[in-house]
Amino acid sequence: MDLIYAMLGLVILLFAGDSLVRGAVNMSLRLGVPALIVSLTVVAFGTSAPELLISVKAIFEGVPGLAMGNVVGSNTANILLVLGVPAVISGLSTATCDTRKSYLQMMGATLLFIILSMNGVITWIQGLVLLAALGLMLNSAFRVALSHRRSNHVAANDACCDGEEEVEGADPDMPWWKVILFLVLGLIGLPLGADLLVDASTNIARHFGVSETVIGLTLVALGTSLPELATTVMAALRNQAEVALGNVIGSNMFNLLAIIGIASLVGPIPIERGILHFDLWVMLGASLLLAPFVFLKWHMGRIWGVVLSSLYVIYVMIVLGMS
Image (cartoon, rainbow, N blue to C red; front, side, top):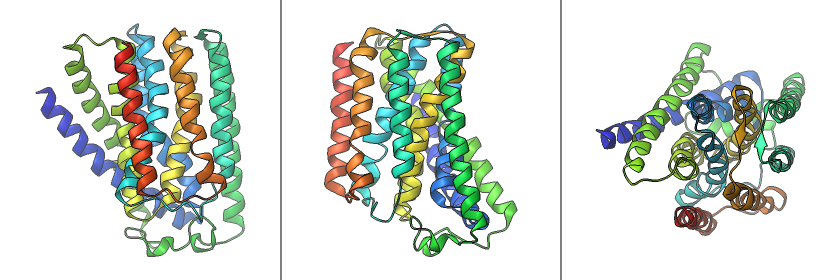
């Protein structure tokens, strides 16, 4: 039954990811807001909902290591796997996407998180600092969105969205009820599918005596990253590189600032030595790998996709070997 539930969860994730991308892209067209901003907020937060639900649940159930492993592992998977797989499938052309500001915000959130983690525990005090940083990031995103809307520029004039109206599934005249329906189906389906998949995968893993922290860093992190993977694959197939990049960058910021920030208000989150000495730095290193694609506009082709995906496989093997 666990295998059946896992497969069902995967199917729901794929359909929900497609629905969320359609809704987000068309909402950006209707509002005159860049797809990057929508993906940094609606799409990113929607696909990070599984991490939030699981992390809070882990604190309540007295397994905080699962919450920390879930977030750190998910952020690493988001960059190496969630961008690597779509790159292998169709490549990601980042030449016309200006994600420099959001990328620098993500790096700032990553460094802030690592610094706060050096204390060995994330308490409600550090949690409030993380949530305050989230507020600043959201304020910046909405200011950009409002400025863009006031300028009355359509999406075709945005430097990151050239040709967006020609993309399959993008319809600037789509009625609002349909846009909202796509968004709702995506936001509901993603957490549901991830929950089914993670629960089933966790039950299977526990039969092999794997620790909660390792489960969080690997199976749970991979499971909760599948919404991002489903979304970025669909975005890549629709030539929406800005949605793919914005989704990953926004999700990583949301994971560090919102999920751990909120979870720490429920209870303190101790950080194991393995995460402090290894996994946090792998997460930082993976984040730095995006710099050439953001600042030098390197094309993320199939070779880079293979490299990123292989690095994630190696990382998982090392984590399992250390358990």
